[in-house]
Length: 150
Image (cartoon, rainbow, N blue to C red):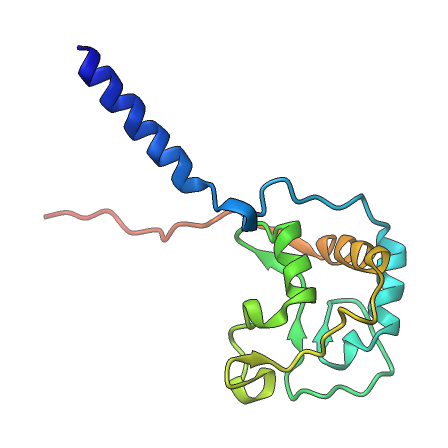
């Protein structure tokens, strides 16, 4: 019985340790609360609207893409804070799908300008807070299949 208990304990510990990604783990990552209004100002003044679109936000900035990359809208899962931060500071991490590849990337590298040296941390925090407000999570709607009669 003791061997069985130790085997279960050891297996549990191995499974739990597999979840830890070491020093590169995002565990514990958190930025202070931002201000969405200031984030909107960052979005409007840094040229984001030259390649991105958010429903209800108009701009006089010329659009550089045939089909702007849409931010926000109805999604079936939460866009986490960490994903939004990563999208700004490392846009090649995950390139937008559903767009003509040559418009949004060059050989797997995002065409999005790198803002790491031009945005302050406070601006990044406010921008991400603003972006979060534009996503609406909708419940998953399973496919309705009719009744099957053999």
